[in-house]
Length: 256
Ligand SMILES: Nc1ncnc2c1ncn2[C@@H]1O[C@H](COP(=O)(O)OP(=O)(O)OP(=O)(O)O)[C@@H](O)[C@H]1O
Ligand SMILES: [Mg+2]
Image 1 (cartoon, rainbow, N blue to C red):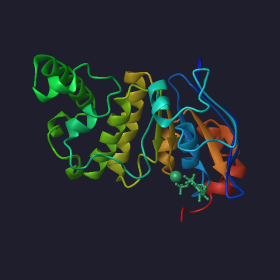
Image 2: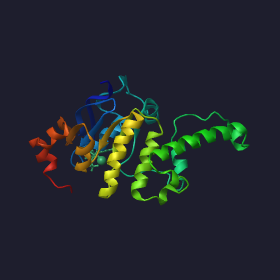
Image 3: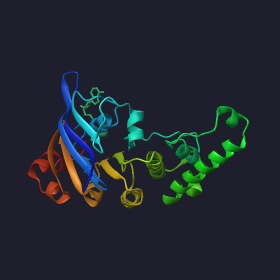
Image 4: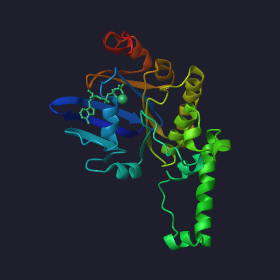
C-alpha cells in the first residue's frame, strides 16, 4: 500500500513550549486514520503544520514522497491537501453552489473582459463549473439546496458543505477537524457513512480529528493518540481501546 502522508519527528515550539513534539504518522492510500487526544493535546496544531499555517521547528512532512518544506498553504492545496476547520468556515452570504464553485482549483480560461461582457467563452466555462459543482452536491444529496444561502443551512448540512468544498479542490489527503462537533446522533451516523463514501468514491485518504469515539472507532482503520503534544499510542481501534496509557490519558477522563 503506498504512502500518501508521512510525518517524521515533527516538532513545533510556541513561546518555549512544545505544542507538538516527535510526531510521527503514516497515512496510506485510501486509508481513514484517526487523530485523537484530550483538549489542548496538539491535534489542530498538527493540521496547521500539515497545511503550512505554521512552520515546524524541526521534522519532515512528505505528501506522496514530496517534501512540503517551505510550501505555502495554497501550494499545499495544489499538491493535494484539503482541510475543514474546527469552527466552520463558509461564505455564509453566498449560495451553496457558489461556495462549491469557489473552491475549484482549476483556472478559468476566460479573460476579465470576456467575463464583464459575458462573452461565449465565459458562459461555456461557467456552465462546466456549475455542472461539476452540481455533481458534487448530488453525491451528498444536497442539489436541492444549491440556491440557498450557505448561512441558512442547518448545522449538519453546513458541515457537509465544508467537506464538499474541501473535496472540490481534488485532494489526495482530506483533513477533517472535528467534523461531528455539534451534530446530533443521527447526523453523526450519517456523517460516518458520508466519510466512508467519500473515501470510496473519491479515492482520497482521510485523517480526522474527532472526540466522538463511536465515529472514530467505527470508521478509522488506524488511530494515533496525542497527549501534551506527544504520541502516546498508535494502533487499530481495538488496540487503542484496550491500551491502559490511552485509557488513563483520554478515554477514562470526561471531556471538559
Ligand atoms: N499559535 C499558537 N501560539 C501559542 N500557542 C499555541 C498556538 N497554537 C496552538 N497553541 C497551543 O498548543 C496547544 C495545542 O493546541 P491545539 O489547538 O492544537 O489542541 P487540540 O488538540 O486541537 O485541542 P481541542 O481538542 O481543544 O481542539 C495548546 O496549549 C495551545 O494553546
Ligand atoms: Mg483542536
